[in-house]
Length: 319
Image 1 (cartoon, rainbow, N blue to C red):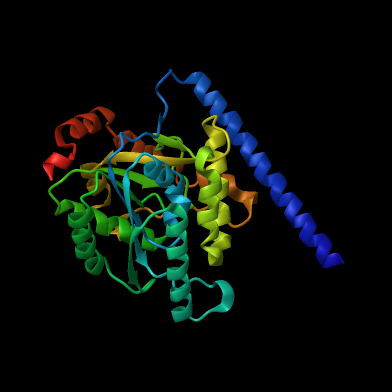
Image 2 (tube, one colour):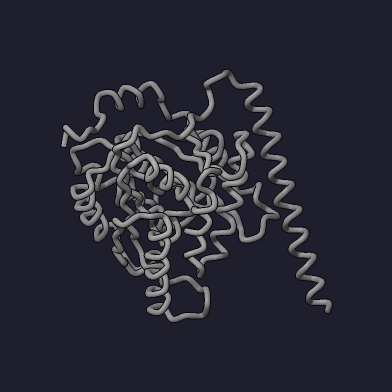
């Protein structure tokens, strides 16, 4: 009886903490919108249609937790979406499975997720989690770029805490440096928030929220990590005055992405913190690494980005 009461109390206090953070983000966002000039904030997500979209997911579940709502909106607009899963997720400690059994389970979950999303083009690279090199991944990503010829790439970044997300970002930057075309990059938030200083595109997922949740549920072994990303989507919606959930992105040119991730991850400042399983300290994930986000934001030149987009925009006729 006492154990049941403690579990009930834990759930209630966690729910109250999440609601408290949500209210704080809503208030902070409302104040920021009041003090910011019209049109100065993040742009709403959009697509002209007919785009080729590539999603580079370091782990199975990163694709749907980081940008699943945007992918569904791409598909609804007639865009062609390709998913690539870099690692096999074998090091997950869930369910008490062996590494080989977990890798097989994660591949099955990835296939189920892609089916729910409605994505038929997906590739399982299956690199053994924690046991692969950037040198092994880079040529495979370069071959994938040649195959898909994406207009838009959703990718991880250095604004993260996970070494495998860093390595994937570095490998992608090296592959892009060898590729002659210039897609747009949309950096996704994978358990580590981008924050107001880096977010420049926001996608409301309310219209596709039920389908996104069904796709997330396909990764049944990862309930501990998917719960925290759902809270982050709720906080994003609250901060930007949107109903339901929303996804935040940091959009940039391929050249800018290469510049940010050209050096080896060992040189990147490890100052960012992820949301934890329970919400009591969620706000710390937004405060940790605040100075680093500000520094990256100050380096960003929107006018230069716009010029680069106009000069190097990829079209079907170019390829």
